[in-house]
Length: 357
Image (cartoon, rainbow, N blue to C red):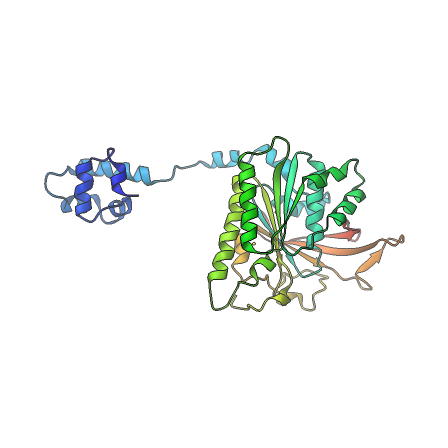
């Protein structure tokens, strides 16, 4: 901030004298020396030492961000936020999903075929069915989203009029980062003047891997800067509009970047958290893709793996309905206890309690 912008709160002749001494901004006034040192540099008779100290305090106050008490911050998380959580209906899994509350950015990660998208779709549909006033934006970056499949899963819920939930599920195709920015900007405009009936409560980006893997490079930081800026925009959305944002990461084989090196969806590269029963050939030498910095751009990472059975990971219930067993681990969390595991099974796209758990 230029000191000239503080006139007439600060006398114009004092600002002019300070500028002649090379003190033109609030940073110069506050950090270029003590008040006494600056006073000695001013022309005689410009002001008194006491007045200069008072004016300096005024400038510091004008340049400071207003403080906020912890009580006010906690009050911002109203009870209505609890009504907008994304839960599965499975008690053990929902303990992990307590991190998926409004204003948070959650990463769903794991190997390809581990059940990440099915988990997300189940959470989204459950949320829409249970909360008739909520809507969700699903940003499809691969073109794999199937509205038909979503409708079939809703029918399996066995809830009357569950199909109306699809009317509140907005799906946008976006194969490039710039297109996603346009989608989010349109959403921002609509949320500024929210519709009276339906309010967007969740955003799913499926997947972030396809957006950023082509622009990441071991010889340039531009791709990482773009990725970081994008994730910060998602976080701003989550916090400003009380939205839960999920991102998914996927397949390691599509990445060539291996330097020392997120309710967004993210693929895995070379270090998977150890989960008993994982189908990975070597589950202890896998790590999240998109470089090590991505993990610190989200509030929590939920790792999902497909577990193998002694005989076959695919079982049937006797009626020909195939099911698979999965384990979810809250691998990293800024807001709650991490390293927590739970198992579940997926049958026809529906999440069910795992009897062996």
